Length: 80
Image (tube, rainbow, N blue to C red; front, side, top):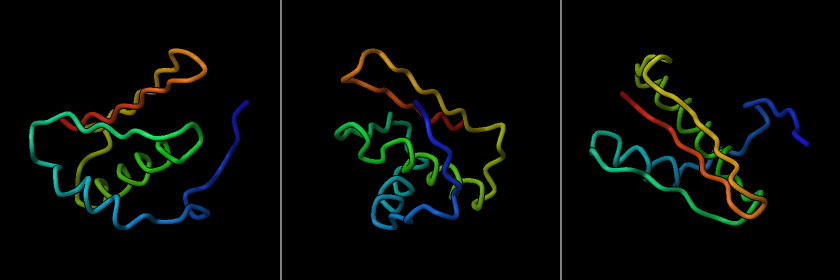
């Protein structure tokens, strides 16, 4: 059961985005963990929005959501 939420309604988490952006050009896998429904997907969508503002082309990012079971979601953002 999904829900529709526009980016305008989201709370911008400056501290978390700043941490993700600090590692933007480092070839490491960034892992975001947290409880179910705590905003991990939303945080990565905000991160993608910030990358677009920094002239990263939409084709350079890929968002993959892997729902392995009810207790574990893996969300990936790849930047090429």
